[in-house]
Image (tube, rainbow, N blue to C red; front, top):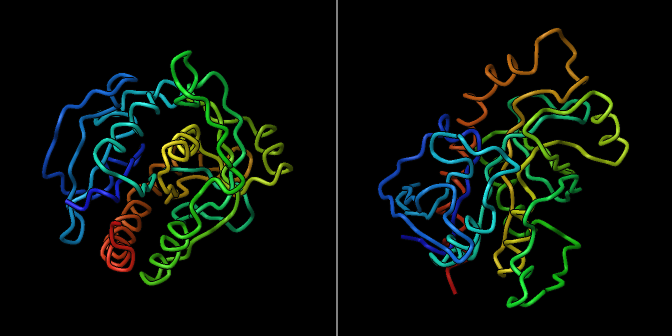
Length: 253
């Protein structure tokens, strides 16, 4: 296994062509993660992986045990982590099926367990979160996408509470705030990784225009159905290119 690089895969898990070669039940001080600790084979490398919403996709975004997921991967030796996320496209010209590697985020979520240090017996850490996604890992994701011939967007990921989708007025607000895309799961995943010293970045695929942004009459769920398979095929391409390249140029310390 190449344990220092790991994955957390969200709603597109069923459409992502991952070769699962191992499963291990795990527990953490914060409870059980969303799935067993999966071992996936990508380009002759084996990586630790968690299914963010469970293998059967039954855990809503606001009910995910983010602390257990990140802690389980950390205990498995993961020090560089890629989150695979589905997002809605806000920015003009950002079409469903396009990949994204966000550089910044704005957190609109509420009530989520957002720190490992919120108990009386745990140290509170005021981590520097100026740049929420690791620039080197994020840049490697973008470069791998270009190498595969896929366009990729950068920008700001607006993290909403879910599980409902947003109103058109809420998307207007996110755009005024500077958001390029909208999703539901990058937080508190990103800050929990930062607390544990894990380098974290997101490989996202836009599967729909955000509310009020579709140029046609297609409902959002119809767009998702149309875009998901092709978008996740591009994610598979990028991971197959990224994993061997990134591990070769940045070996585990």
